[in-house]
Image (cartoon, rainbow, N blue to C red):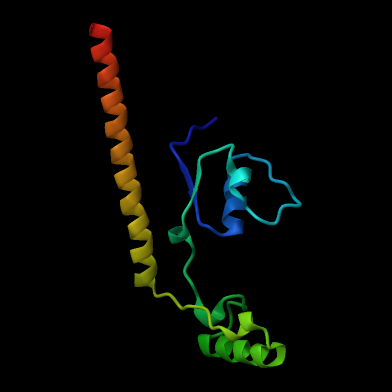
Length: 133
């Protein structure tokens, strides 16, 4: 099988589930949360910067709705439902905001790869030096 240096996913449950399916791991169907204990078989690193673009008022509504239609539908639902979750308008993220977030993750990934490379090089050099003694 394939060997992965590391595997990453967003902090959303569906991302965990997809990653586990791709990695061939089993998941308890009765567990509706993704806890660290469930991820112990693989180095699956969770990072919120890997979330999809936040669509604001359109979150959870049909994609065919315009932003104004989704806002009106959300406000209408909030008036009828009176639930606090419906009364808060989700954040609308611009493409630039999303790119900045993902670029930050890419930068940290590169830093981790470089650090791992130099750490493994140092360990190899240390091992070679010990063999010579």
